[in-house]
Length: 157
Image (tube, rainbow, N blue to C red; front, side, top):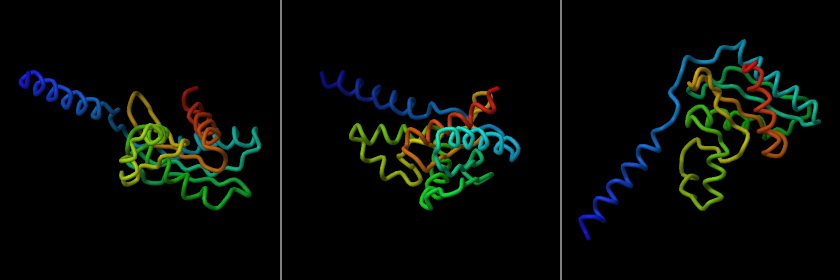
C-alpha cells in the first residue's frame, strides 16, 4: 500500500511539474510598429465604449515598447497597465489566470513577484510564441480585458 502511495505521489508531482512547464516559448520581440497597431485597437475599443484607458505594450521579456494614455485616465492606471503587460509577457499567460487562482484560494500566488492578479493583461502571441504583452487599465477589469483583446485583433487580421 505504501509503495502504491509513493508511486502515486511521485507521478502526481511529476504531472504537476510538467503541466507547470507547458507554456508557449518566447519568440522574437514585438516591434514598435506592431505595438502601435495593437495599442490603436485597444484605444479604439475604449473610445467606442467611453472608457478612459492606459495601454502598455512590452516586449517578450516585459520591457516597455509603447505606451498610450487617453485623456482623463486615472493616474493609477499608468502603472497598473504596465504591470499587467509585464506579468502577461513574463509569465506567458493572461493576468486573469492569477486572479482566478487567488479567487480559488491559491493565495500563494500573491507572493509571486511581478504577478499582477487583475484581468486586463494578455500575452501577445505570433506563430504560437510569446512576442510581448499588452496591459490595459482604467475601467473595470473585464472592460480592460475587452480593450486588450480588441488590440490583439489588430494583428490577427
